[in-house]
Amino acid sequence: MTKILFVCHGNICRSPMAEFVMKDLVKQAGLENDFYIASAATSTDEIGNGVYPPVRRLLSALGIDCSGKTARQLTSADYDRFDLLIGMDRANLRNMQRILCPGGDCAEKLHMLLKFAGREAEVADPWYTRDFEAAYANISEGCRALLDFLRS
Image (cartoon, rainbow, N blue to C red; front, side):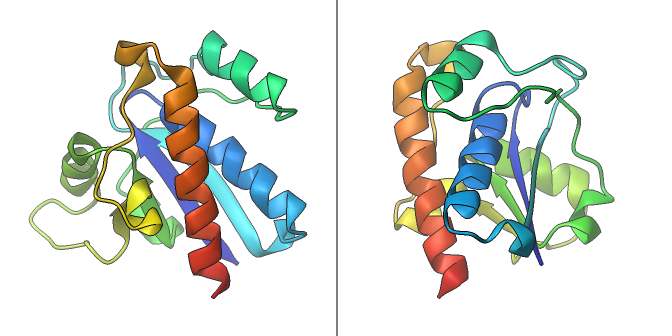
């Protein structure tokens, strides 16, 4: 079983969107038993809060249910629990490095999502841009590429 943790700043927009898009993709592929997928935050800003309403509405319109998800913070134990830890932007990666392996190198498990789509781009934070559709397009592209990578 491949265990994937998606990570962003608050765990209410991008990382839960990636979590539930990826869960939907593996379900469509009939691979639900091959993956464990979750998400977390690098900050404590939103801990315990649900998925941000515009993200819930967008996912719901796509037939993807994210009910029950609440934000949680990344912990050092997550490094051993997950095979891949996927950040949405460079700031996420820096904070993931700080939390997961201070003073050490854990680069083989840490990646930016769009790297799997062959791009060094970041997934812009829709909390600030207000462009949830653009975030979804990037996340969907990255998750599809990640699944292709893991299946090959």
